[in-house]
Image 1 (spheres, rainbow, N blue to C red):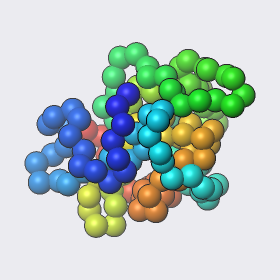
Image 2: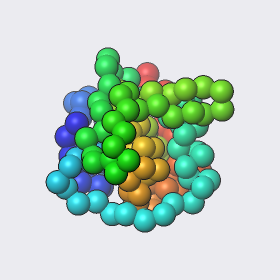
Image 3: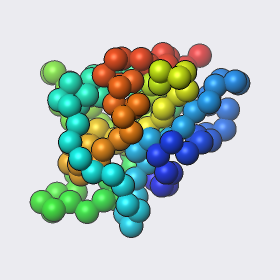
Image 4: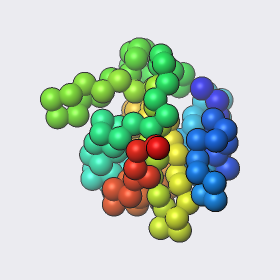
Length: 140
């Protein structure tokens, strides 16, 4: 995966965002690139897991692996989370939500793992949009 700074303009893949919509990156992490760390509300983690299960966007073939170092030595591939009775593989889709200002905040679905395993602290507007369930809806 490629690193994109949080809130930088989203441009991948070209044409995947409707004309006139501003979209920005969130949570495109890579080794060697610093990222904010901290704790997030449990409701955010629950809401993010549901979004990963119920509304994957830009589904691709195959999976990206988490390239960040794992202190426990585990290198699960693909990364899987349990959401209710469902096992969801991460690393092959995006989550897309709408900020209060109308712009789209787009993250790889691996962002769930980054938050829970690496203490990644996304921008507050992303946390707010996920918790409020302001999704972009299915792509046409």
